[in-house]
Length: 104
Length: 414
Ligand SMILES: Cc1cc2nc3c(=O)[nH]c(=O)nc-3n(C[C@H](O)[C@H](O)[C@H](O)COP(=O)(O)OP(=O)(O)OC[C@H]3O[C@@H](n4cnc5c(N)ncnc54)[C@H](O)[C@@H]3O)c2cc1C
Ligand code: FES
Image: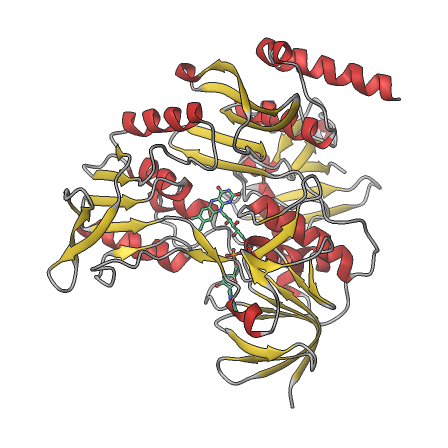
């Protein structure tokens, strides 16, 4: 289990334990994170799982994959330097404590 | 005493389940029954023909959010089929005899695989692929046979063929028409997908009509074509299109043609909505109605009906259709609808497995197919939404030229 924080635009946060191996879009759905819908089920087809990794906590998620990168360039909520599609992030010990800003 | 609900949703596929998700997130407090004739928690169907059978997992990704599963006002009723009802009285009867009352009704009954009514169709080892239960049947058969015949060269069978190719299997796709996906994609795309599947060792035969199945009286052994050719088969997957599940709606007295007929508000009658694969809805950008089978259509219509059920008045339903398919290493995406008779402009090279096909009716862009270009697909959705048609020169120059043209138009409009 790792701990994941989702941070809303108003600064409020949702903390949850996530089993290793689960992708963070599914984790967001299970925890009802507002605005994350994962419409395509993690097929990298919808971009409704867009998040911004808050690296101020010291935990980074790494670079997006090539196709993900192309999608991120076009997300409606606007790309940031640490944007990721959360369906492509899989819970692992390195991500323990990660903070994800929910793109609105 | 019958169980009374504010909203009864029949069918817990992508449309019904997403509607519940949105109602819960909107903090809807009315009572909702979500009725499913499947035994499982609602799940994503697309993986079933893609990666699902390659893994050992036996459940697909869940559709309902944590909140939808735990909200006290949501009653999920699996393994229940609605047998009939009375719209005037606001009541429904389940096949087990239970009576339900509703104030508002949502039909999200989906579509079912079209059956092949030919000799031998009742043999074991002939399946279609719609549900998790179907996928499990295929998985079981894969332990027993390496001879697979896939009847119909549509999305489901092409995805399945590419995902099952290898491991010593013989996979043959038999398609009745002269090209794959004739009604859905351009000839260039049909040819590309055929070549790519063939590279994986899949045999694809066009203009082949299947006329009967042969077996030992119990299990299938061969698929036979009208031309008299016999193909050995331990498993035959029939995927030749779908028919809308509109029988219940007809019994309820609702008009059905190619699906349940609705108005621009997705209403089939006062207080009765229909959405997803089962609905024949007006296309505001054309003068006719259409039926779509896609996750996008189910989801966008569910978003719309959620607004309607929570009382927000709205304009007519309108959304840009989009679709994806994964065939082996290739990701096909389609934005808009590729109608017959379009002029097509190609950007990139099919040989590089990285290209796009732009469809125009006159000067108007109506659809874009992309292979392994998810960014361009997103751009295409934006162009269609903003009613922007790039010139042929811009398309050939590539994404940056299109983006620049779109941005310059946007700045002029401000
Ligand atoms: C194998 C496969 C792969 C796919 N891949 C893609 C893809 O890659 N991309 C894409 O965009 N789309 C894809 N689709 C299509 C997509 O899954 C459908 O468009 C979507 O599921 C439609 O949702 P729906 O809710 O309208 O219908 P469904 O998902 O069909 O759900 C309807 C449900 O209602 C139930 N039902 C019907 N009648 C009754 C009744 N009387 N009482 C109770 N329950 C009832 C049905 O059993 C069913 O469970 C795929 C479909 C399949 C089968
Ligand atoms: S869930 Fe669709 S892109 Fe991540």
